[in-house]
Amino acid sequence: MPAQGVSAADVNLTPAVMRRLGLAFVDWLARSLGREAAGLTVSTGRDSRISGPPLMTALMEGMASGGVRVLDFGMASTPAMFMSTVTPGFACDGAVMLTASHLPSHRNGCKFFTATGGFNREDITELLRLAQGGDLPSADAPGAIVTADFMTVYTGQLVERIREGAAHPEHPNQPLRGLRIVVDAGNGAGGFFAGDVLEPLGADTTGSQFLEPDGSFPNHVPNPEHPEAMASLRRAVLEHRADLGIIFDPDVDRAAAVDARGHEINRNRLVALAAAMVLREHPGSTIVTDSITSDGLTDFIERDLGGVHHRFRRGYRNVINEALRLNAQGQECWLAIETSGHAALKENHFLDDGAYLMAMLLIELARARSEGRDLGALIAGLREPAESREHRLGVSAPDFGVYGNRVIDALRARAAEEPGWAVVPNTHEGVRVACTAPEESGWFLLRLSLHDPVMPLNIESEVAGGVDRITGRLRAFLAGFENLDLDALGPDAGAPAPVGDPPR
Picture (cartoon, rainbow, N blue to C red):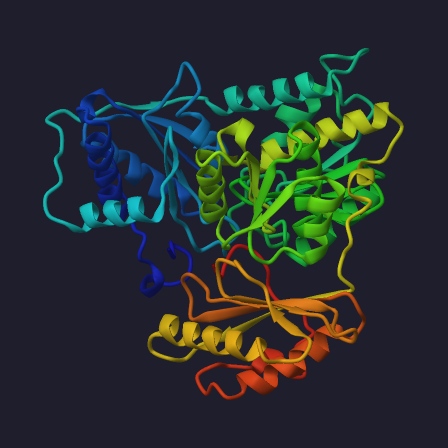
C-alpha cells in the first residue's frame, strides 16, 4: 500500500486506516482463539521506512483500544516478529510487522502472524472484511502499550544456533574467529546482524555497509536479487578480501550472499546450496521451489544430491504451504525456497527467515574452512544455463486473468504440436515447455501474475543465442493476441528485467 512520501492522492495507508486494522486484528484474534481480548498480548515491529513510526503508533493505539496488551519492539525483522509468538517468555498471541519488503520507500504494509504462521489469503480477506464492516468491539479500558526488547532474544537464538552447528573444537564460543564477513543491510532493519550476531561469534565485519537504518534507501535498491545491489556487495567483498558477503532485504526475510571469489549466491545457486545442506542432513527429502527454477537445478537436486525436486507456484506462502501439505501427507520435506531468496526450513517452523538461512551458510563456511575446502564445493556440480532472461508482458484486457489464461491454454495447445517443443506436465501454474532442438536447448515458462495485469515469461537456454531463438518462435505465436503487449520482446529484449518478489 502506498504510504506517506509521494502525494496526498497516493496515500491510502493512513494512521486512521492503521487504527482500524489494529482493532480488526484484535477482533479477529479473539474470535480465532476463543478468548477475551483483554487477556491477549500482541507484538509490533517495523522496518526502517520513513512512514513506519506514525503508522506503527496508530496501529498500536488501535489494538490497545480493543483491550489487548501491546508490546512495542521498535525496529525489528519480520522473522523476529513471528518468533515472538513461539519463544518462551514472550509467546505473544499475535504479531504485526510493518514493512513493504524491497518495494519503493514510499510504500508500506503489514504482515500478520500467530503461532501457526503468517496470514494466508483467506485470513487477510477476513481481516479486511472486519475492518471495512460496521462497529468493532472496543474495550472499556484500553490495553497497555509497553516497550520491549525482543531483538536481543532473537539474535541470541541465532548466535547459539551457529555456535552449536559450527562446533569449533578450539573456539566453541567464537567459531567464526579468523573469518571476515561483509554485511550489506541496504539501510533496512538488518544492520543488527553484523554487531549482534557476527561479532560475538568472533567474525571480523570490516567492510560492512549500509547498516544504518534509512527508510529512503539512498544507496541501492534493497533487494537481494537486484543486479545493482549484488554488484555493490560483490565490490565490497573483493575490496576487503572477505570470506563471505551477506545481503538482506529491508525486513530480513530474504537474503543472498557473495563468496570470497566474488561469485553470487542467489536465485538457483542459493537454492542449490540450501538444498545441499538440507539433503546432507535429511537424505531423500523433497525440496519445494517456485516454478521458475532451472532444469540444471532439478538434475543437481535429484541426480547429484539424491533428493526430490518439487516445483510449485510462485509466492513464498505458496511454496511454504505446499511443503506443509506434503509433510502432512507423509512426503518428507525439509525445505521450501523461492528463487527470490525466501527460504523456510522445517527445523525453523517453516519460517522464511533470511538471517536463519545465512546462519546456516555461516555454519557451512566454518566447517568448510576447518576441512580445508571451499564453500562453493557443495554446488560444484550445478549446471547453469548459458543464457537466462525474463520478460514481463502487459495485458490490456479488462479481465486480465481470464485473458491471460486464454493465452496460456492456446500456447499449451500450440506447443504440443511444435517440433522440438514438449509441454512439461504438472507445472502448477502457467505453461512450461521444454525446448529440445539443439539450437534452442532450454525451456520457457509463461504464467499469469497473481495480482498485476502482467504475464511474466522466463526463458533459459544452455547454448549461446538459444534464448533469442526461443523468443522469436514465441513472438510469432503471441503476436496473434492483440491485448498482449510484446514490447518487452522487441529490440531491447536483452536488457535486464527488474527482479524481486512482484509480480506474483
